[in-house]
Image (cartoon, rainbow, N blue to C red; front, top):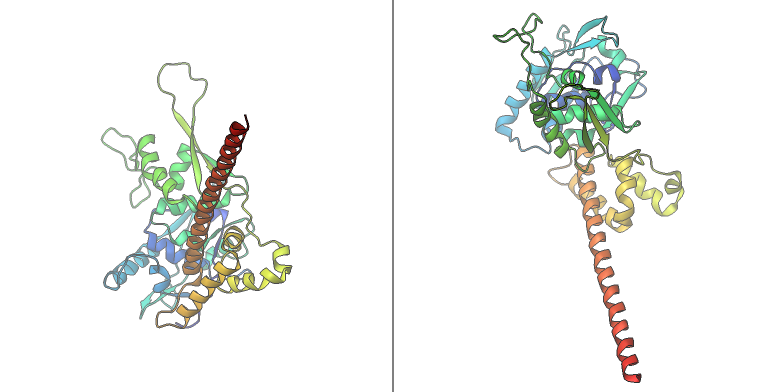
Length: 368
């Protein structure tokens, strides 16, 4: 590796990239691309000549073993080399292609000794470096997803998180999710025997079942957990079942607190802990959500465990993914423990009230 990658733990990309017509590719290809984009700094003015990452950064958290890892990465690089994004103007009067990778340079796209090397097409720089209109999403949650459709939802909903929902026509949704008309190598629409365009999941129920239902489950308990609401046609004069014409996806977590409050940073009791968590790449949104319930004691236990692992034979290779996942698990367990304590305390209080009531009743009966 010719340099040490630094990950911010956040993927930032232009809206034109998020809403480009992307072909469905493997999860491993999406992970490689996310890892590359995550290396682009806020103060960068151009793309690096090449980007590198270790294979462990892609496979950590998966059940892929060493014997099949090479095949997975080779397949992903084959896919990425063929990827091209189609950009289209809002009025649909202009469209153009951009290939994702640059394979024309002496420095080569490929894999060697556990190191993946990627050269991005320099023509994509306006969409990835200092993009005027970008969307951002956390890397740690993105890399945990197992489905390309879930990853696309993660990207789309991140772009609309300020609004709180994403509403889209069925036809546009199909194009974003690569379920529109299939085309041949010349870009011509493939038709069936009846002359109708061939589509993946041709009926709306099939489309919902295969692209939305899985994402609903995978994004549960994330910042982009959503509710799906089909929008039906109105004003239909003929009889029959109404047609679904639009999909509406409403985020369940509206405007989450993503920045650590200034008061926490100024408080002597919490400022040092927050700085340590940030050093381990814990996202601010997770700090604000789980640090209060973990308290100082619970947080120190995690920090000490990570420090021991850092000094072990098997150190943490990806702080962002590993530590955020561990922090979330511990936070959720602390929330569950708190609920159980509150429930037990409530039952105990009710029993004490009942016992006092019975004592007073017996005392009143004896006096009468």
